[in-house]
Length: 343
Image (cartoon, helix red, strand yellow):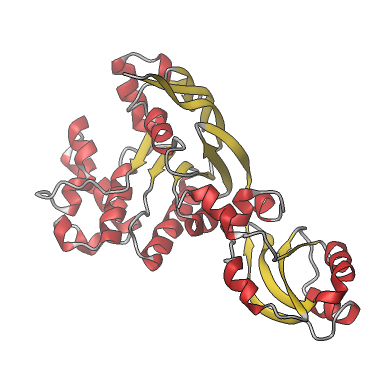
């Protein structure tokens, strides 16, 4: 378990003091993946560095399994860090060492026996699907394979916590999905608490149980991913399943509106479009949709075209069905995504 309490990080420079983290509070339980998102400069990377104390916080505490790392002396901290596995944006493999040698480096530093070393490395490479690449060198691997080696190395000392800092950045979508699937499997098998820092909103949907949005060093939104996805006021929810409303408005014409319909309740009727057609507009048209199940919630959006002279009736029916409807006029829904991820 990770408990971050009132974490503050300040830097002093020629112009004074800059506060990068401002009272961050987060808890990540065993078996949970918490994703931290936010625009560039929000403090995500600084948070990652403070969690494993690569940078020491100005104030506040970081507890791992009830052990406050900020109070430990150097030798005690080195021991405590063994319970934290870290996966970086770049796998950071040593180019002159084989895959097996890279994975086994932590064991070499601790003086493990050759037998224990070989057994643990073989076990980890099998788990990440790279047993046949044990004698390869990093330059002989794809980017995704290199990241799998990095994950195996992070697990070498049997940590209870994983810190993933932009671990899928720069990978293609298929490779990214394979890495997030692996992380979720490892979370379940090893009961890991995983802090997943990213700017990729598509990845968040595939990997996270909970999401925290960091902005100017503060947590401004935090909750279960399913709850955020059905909350019409959630900027994170809007960004996770987003639509470019500027393109959507091109579907509108003189007689019809385009509506953005989002799932706003746990139990939305699967035939809601047919109900709207029967109650409001038999000519209603489905233009675009993205509906999926996330952590047991049916979530997503649909763009529909409906007669513009029935706006109030349409809005009332949408609400009664547990949906959130937004008429695409001057508001650009895409902007909410940009605010969250800082693109």
